[in-house]
Image (cartoon, rainbow, N blue to C red; front, side, top):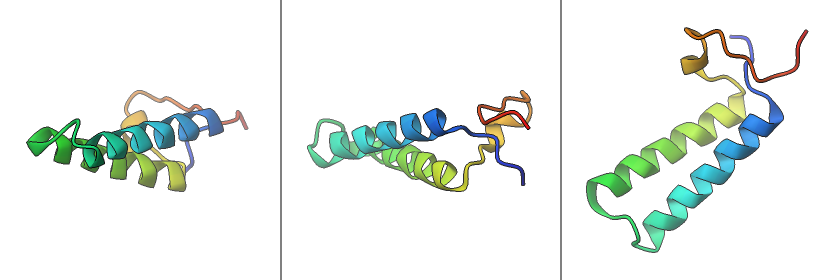
Length: 67
């Protein structure tokens, strides 16, 4: 799989994931919504680490460097 995420995209996803986890841990967001945010945070971290977002494929989005 070809990487399709740039550095800025990765950093933004990591920051959003941290915010979601902090909101859950401080009980600002609880219940089902809290667990949904935790799942999204995990997805954001995983996609940032591998540099590939499957949702970008159908739209042919590439935020990485041009080759």
